[in-house]
Length: 112
Image (cartoon, rainbow, N blue to C red; front, side, top):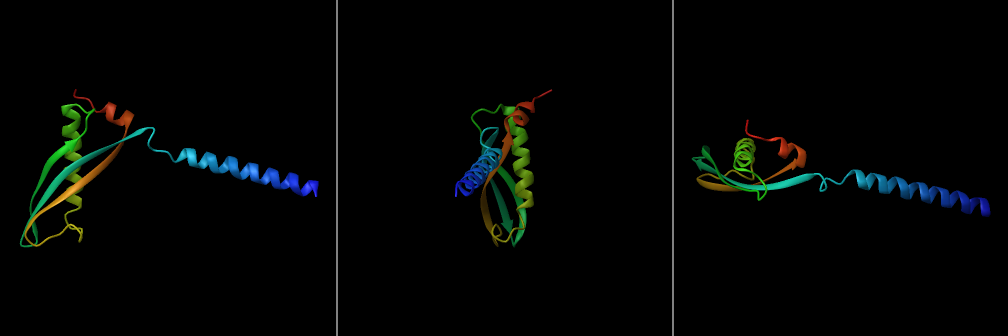
């Protein structure tokens, strides 16, 4: 009976250690930032007429970093233009686009 309990304790301890190691490796909040931005896609007769960047919400970004992030938002909204949930026949579709970027990558965006 004691041998069974020791094996059981060893297995449970190993499982607990492995599960906590896996959980710690999946945390992205410690080293990344989430930036929210808004864009609009204007449709005319079911075709894309214009894609416009409305706003980049980033309190800790410089103007140059906001400009670079805005270009990425336009690229992502360009890729989203034919998604069925974003298409409308006539009018403007507003998109909220979230960009997740590592802190060191954001700091590396500098005007040269």
